[in-house]
Image (cartoon, rainbow, N blue to C red; front, side):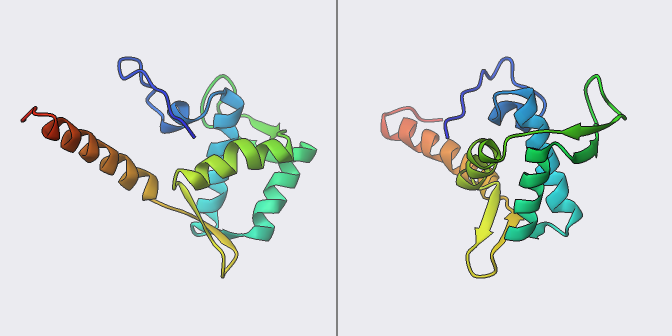
Length: 133
């Protein structure tokens, strides 16, 4: 996944940098909340359950921001798009890990670590090209 951002107009929320639409941001935040509520790790079955509830439009949550803040709402999101646009990018960027043996999804800090490595590589490249800090 490619992340394009304008460092002069960067959103305060990391989800706003990564996801393109408000709906994707809301669903991604709910997924992270769901995983946190389950001790930071959920099974493949639980992931399927949340995707199915979203697909059927029966997933209920209380909004924490925006114009519906504090209101209980039902979210609807296509199951295939959930996997393609939310879960897969979060896995590929290192925000969520999937354990093949335990068949569980777990929140990860690999995303943060990778961004630090990218910054270091940029500095190394500039140094190799003759710019010393």
